[in-house]
Structures are given as structure tokens and as C-alpha cells.
Image (cartoon, rainbow, N blue to C red; front, side, top):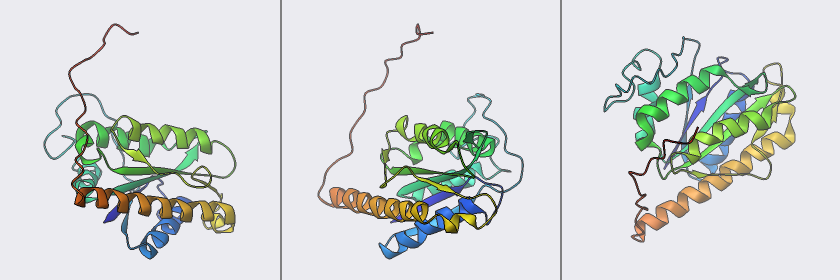
Length: 207
């Protein structure tokens, strides 16, 4: 089993990365593989609703990692999306990235486990945490929680390592996610089939 994590910060080794790394180290102790995917510093295009998604993902996804991430997501069992907090909100980079990932590759995530992590100097963490969790709800995913909201604090790179409670929360999140993944795997082996959601109804008069 493997968890794919997304570092939504342009800082490769900053506090968001260190928070995800703490999760990854605990996942390994639980027998779960992990990979941290770096969103990087290259421009990330917004989803423009062109409806030209392909079987590989976004029609514009060859240059910014979106389709590469979708390809990896199809092989992953769980996900953690990490973001720094900008103006009490996730980074614009990660939202543009995930909008296109989920619009063009939602099937790679359905019925899998997800969690989000927000990192800030001080405030805005819960709003950012809430925004990222919405991707899970609309895609039929199961959300892993911890012993507090999945947030850590730090400003200068490395300061998050001083947030002992935050790091504890990351480790407990990893333990909970590993437990969920093992339960899902046991269910598959026991022959429990995935739910079949209804489709077709679409209410368009709500404004």
C-alpha cells in the first residue's frame, strides 16, 4: 500500500514539506510506503472548464505535473495534500493544481482515503484545512482525521520542528490513515464490494 502526498508549497524543503515528511516517517513504521510529490515553482494553469479532458487527465497537463500526479494517483491507496497558508487560504498553486487534477481525474481518487494538512505562521489554518477537505467529499473519499485538526505552525523554514503538538498530530494522522488503509484492504480480501452510487439526477434550477 502507498500514500501519495502533495507538497503545495513552492519551497521544496520548507515547513509544509517537513510536516508531510513527519507523516511519511510514521507511515513507514506502519508498513505503508509514501511519496511526496513537489508542486514546484513552475506556473500552474487554472482549470478553464474546456471539457477536453483526456483519458490521461488534463489536456493542458503535460508541462506542470498535473497528469503525472494523476498517473501516480491511480496507483496510490491514500493521499495527503499539504499547503502553506496564504491570506487565510490554501496557496493558489495547490488549488489550481487540484482543481484540474480532480476535474480531469476524479476516478483515480474515488473510494480511497484522503487527508489535508495546513501550515501557517499563525492564523488561517482551519480555513485552509476546510478548503482542501472539500475535494475529498465530492469524490466519495473517506477522510482520515487525527487528535487535532491537521495543522502545524512555523514561519522560517525548519521552525515547524519546534511545534511538538503539531508534529504529534501528524504522526497520529499517519497512524489513523494506516489503520484505515489496512481495514480497506481487509475488506477487499473479504469480498466486500465498493458501493455503486446513483447517477443521472441533476438539479439545475438552484441559483
